[in-house]
Length: 140
Image (cartoon, rainbow, N blue to C red; front, side, top):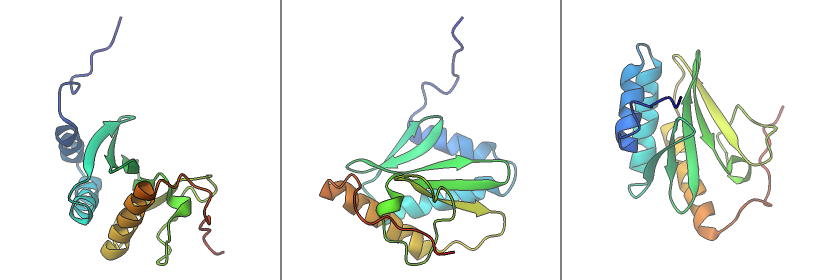
């Protein structure tokens, strides 16, 4: 028997809004804030719902968000090839292409740096680069 998804008919932006509203703690407002930063950084960006997660794309995949028990994750699909001068990437550092920023309760968001990552990801998509550039490694 096939399980029916009650949200299947909702538009991606509605599903994202519903996910945010369902959070009863700090994670909803955190995701809402990150969503706002992404949308303001790239007004032409498309909101999608893939892999049961909010996804943003423009000329290719840019980033996805996930809500976990103790953090909100913002995953950049080509993060390993993006400049990260502020050192925001703190998760997925061993992955071949992606990099993520895990946000925990009470953490300060470097808004300009998040927007810079969004801009860099879109520029990478527009250039047609699929990797092979310099992998950004976090210093130890």
